[in-house]
Length: 176
Image (tube, one colour):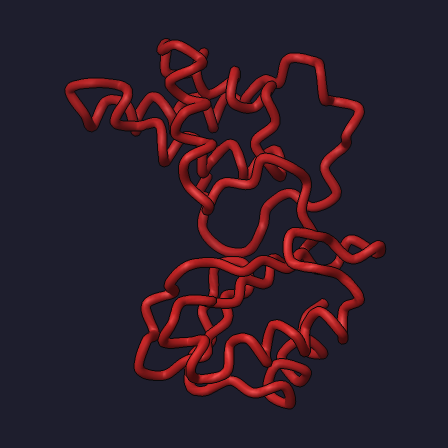
């Protein structure tokens, strides 16, 4: 079973927090295949964390422990990777994660105004999730569109081409 596409798990059951998580057999097989591609299983930590995030919705301590167990490596090593990269969610998120590039290039091209617009429209600050669980807003560093900014990433899709508030409103209205 693949891990591509939109978020596989929405509305994670928070009652699983504090309880061991177990990967489905097909996920254990996928992680074993990832690890087999490398001479050291530590090299498979990032794709295994990505799979865990898809399956469990975010990387709770229990999800990190499940990855460590699946790869048979120490939990702090897996946690170190999960906490270093911003692509991993350590807390529950909305269905749509909105990431506004805030680097200098995008800022000069209007990212600050775009972020202010989203804050006002959604009624949340960066790092927060709307009460209905639809959107999580973040400011991030470099979405690799310095010449066409400001840009916005929604989940795994990057929207470039000089976004303005009207274009973003239209985009948000199109999302479920």
